Amino acid sequence: MSRLRSLTRWETGLLVMIAIVVVVGQAISPDLLSTYNLQTIAINNTVLACLALGVAPVIIAADIDISIASTLALCGVFMAKLWGGGMNIWLAALCAIGLGGVLGLVNGVFVVLLDLPSLAVTLGTMGAYTGIAFLILKGAAVINFPNGLLNLGSGLIPGTQIEISTVVVVGLLLALAFVVHATPYGRSLFAVGANRQAALFSGIAVVRTRMVAFVIAGVFAALAAIFYLGNYDSVQANIASDQLLPAITAV
Image (cartoon, rainbow, N blue to C red; front, side, top):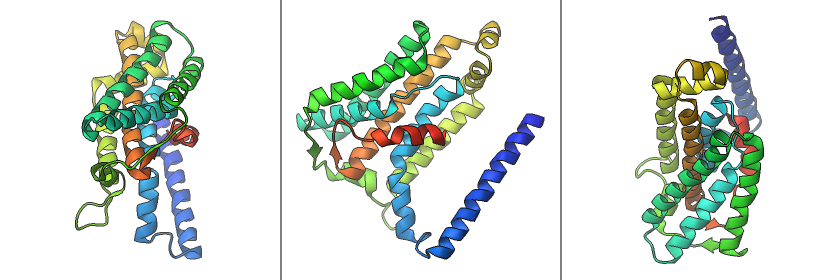
């Protein structure tokens, strides 16, 4: 109970500081809370939000995945190549999500089944995934994606000023929050993160819990790739490399 009160005080202090920054910022620049600026902030942070949501279960379980940005890049490149080869863009997006799950599973196999340090493993796969993306595109870029994808990434809900991508990300946030806080799997995540050995002795499927966390990270990185392509209308092998540390910091 005392720990919960401490956490609440910490979060309350953070919210107060954010409120102060917003008030001061609005006083300095009246355009800070303008509709256009809020839309721009929301759209530009869609990719970051997806990456952060995906890696959150991994961090809760006391692991780390620093390959999420590279997973995003490889899934985006894969999706673009499939579409360039004649596949429907939404079917290509589903294939990219599947690839993201596989890439996350690869991380899980090395970290969980082979009992290797997650930092070292994902550092290696970060380079490997980026390298594969470079081999596929050979330094080129793919642009001019279909309007449907662009609407998902940067379009507005008809008749409103609300971005479609923002609504989707909020839906993903609510779904993941439910899984983490209201399901046995979510409770297992916290138990594994607090004390892996004690969780094992308590009958929790530690291996499965950690493996699923890495798969979730891969799937959400692929979703982030879809939003990236829809927002920026382009893809290269090194996209979103600057989103890794902000995503982990956000968690």
